Image 1 (tube, rainbow, N blue to C red):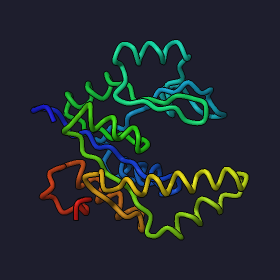
Image 2: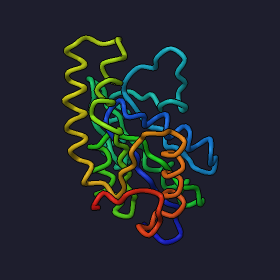
Image 3: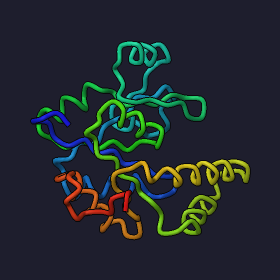
Length: 198
């Protein structure tokens, strides 16, 4: 991490583990933290606003961001592309605001390459059975889609050893407070979570 800049904390984990819920609670507990807004090529859904949930951009604009090195990371998912704009992350860190990225595992790997000082936090479920129950209990997807999500979740869980910290999301408040402890002091000496190497 560049001297004089605030921490960059990447939160990742499998679908259904509760990333958005934990991050939202962390932001409530500490409004100083800035959550990065991703750019996407998909169309806005009902109720979504440009610049709040996502920056909605054309394929051409996304290509321009990629070619101009304007994204910290990006990935394709379900026929659309998603990425983290670099400039707002840099600006907020330089102003002293800790920055959170809530992104997928492959995006976290890219951030590790681009920002070696970033802290990578993996949210894990209390058990595979609980995660499976969350993914199958939604009732909004076909059996085939659920099976794809489960297969992806198993792959993502296998990657948790690549992360600096693993937090088990058994309790949202507790998990959010642990995340904040690492965001405010991302050194391994902090007791806010479990180093992935242990």
